[in-house]
Image (tube, rainbow, N blue to C red; front, side, top):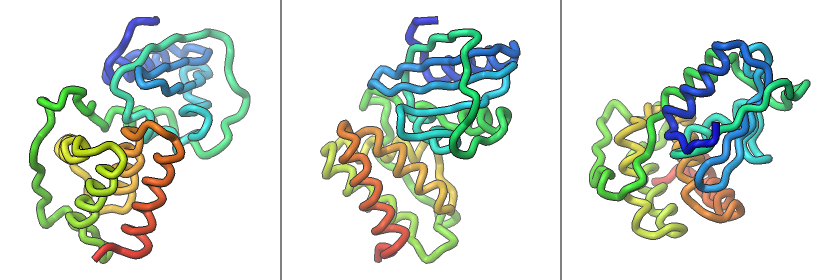
Length: 200
């Protein structure tokens, strides 16, 4: 299959190949230039990598951020070992299916997002302040569009009061930055400020 797929169509196709107990490698090329490789062994996902940097469960948040991509399946070729942790195939699909697509057009974005009191972190971190700092930091890299991207993410994903949810948000929004080194700098800055220094 070489036609361009939306994220839901992409996950649906991967699931179909898995349910058919296929053996082989799924190659995914996103429209923004990222490469994903998923290996199936009799339908079970045994290998998962995003670009060459994120392997196993680390790849999942980055795959979730894909908007459009092309998929190609090559049968009979698979890796023998997965470096890094890998959840069960059922859990992988559960995680991949839990994230909705961020619209491409700015007109589709929400202009405001309210965080309810129940969404505050159980740690001493204030969720609203953390999100505001994420917006400000992202704007340093991509400009004013950072606000609408963050608001739309919050509207669709609705993070809970956990460090994991904030971490996934940071990693996902980092993909809006073009340069990989700046993506890493963005993430490191936010992790330090939010989780270590704990913004005031």
